[in-house]
Length: 396
Ligand SMILES: Cc1cc2nc3c(=O)[nH]c(=O)nc-3n(C[C@H](O)[C@H](O)[C@H](O)COP(=O)(O)OP(=O)(O)OC[C@H]3O[C@@H](n4cnc5c(N)ncnc54)[C@H](O)[C@@H]3O)c2cc1C
Image: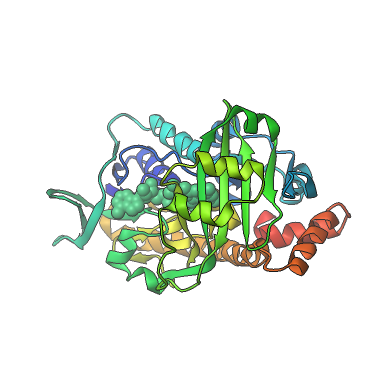
């Protein structure tokens, strides 16, 4: 059996590996020319933990995880005003919480393709898919933009091409039908600065600011990962704020303290910068095409679990499709996948929407309330309520 996977992010790579291990022939098409280095730290807990243990990825993820002692809100001078004990949060989220840099997770998923017998999974970087159609024999075919002769045929097409999925647009409908913006944009980039790196070890540092939040975390080898979230009009039709992403970030974040100013100085001109949004769809499959990961169920960056859900969803897709040996069995296999996985994603999305509502306080009262809630996590009982609000029932 043959599959084409569009997108070599975490979801696409894990789906490709699982199908390759089950004996499928897989072509992965990725628009960027190499694995993308951008992204911030992601919490890894819930279904991704169990799934990655089952498919043998957990030890490899744990080997690249970072240790986080606390998430700390700081004032303009860098002094803590409220602090969340991370070990405690991890225990309440069911133990086993890893903090992983997005590009590290993607690197682990890419390296894990080495488990598949050689030649069965091919990853084609620099291959943006622009068109999808049904073949005469009922299979699917995709074309790569700018290369009319480069088409790929398959029994199944897996759209793992993220929140702005082209496969979704071609097969299910335009982005405006499914994308639900949460009123913010988020940027993430990595800079090298030994002094900043030294100052903020082992903790997430977040500015205690109104209407915008900058975060940073010290990586290995003198680097610092930066994360910036700011408000944006909720309508997808609204024009983008003007200027390059770096100009926008400088406009929004200058003056939030010395560390943030230093991050802005070192910020690349085009960091990852995207709308904070969810993808809500009534169905994830049509004929022989199925969506997985952010393409059909983005929970938003603020839920922090996109990587965990991508691994768990793709592992489950592999379980459902892997044993299929004839095209007639594809439809029922995709239906089983959707039926088993969609409720979990929807629950995580509800938790993501709750997290988004309080992430950027609009006024001093809301900010005080956030400080109070974080301080209250030190009180047994209340800590459990807060953890449930943050991670949803998924933590169980
Ligand atoms: C650069 C980047 C930075 C991110 N940073 C964070 C972060 O800091 N925190 C967080 O929680 N989440 C972040 N995310 C989202 C997070 O990666 C996802 O929620 C999660 O990993 C699920 O991934 P996915 O594989 O479904 O989608 P994605 O990670 O978005 O991967 C989709 C892949 O498809 C490729 N693609 C898109 N269109 C096409 C096309 N037409 N043809 C071929 N390939 C295509 C993209 O280049 C990308 O590699 C980031 C995503 C990206 C792409």
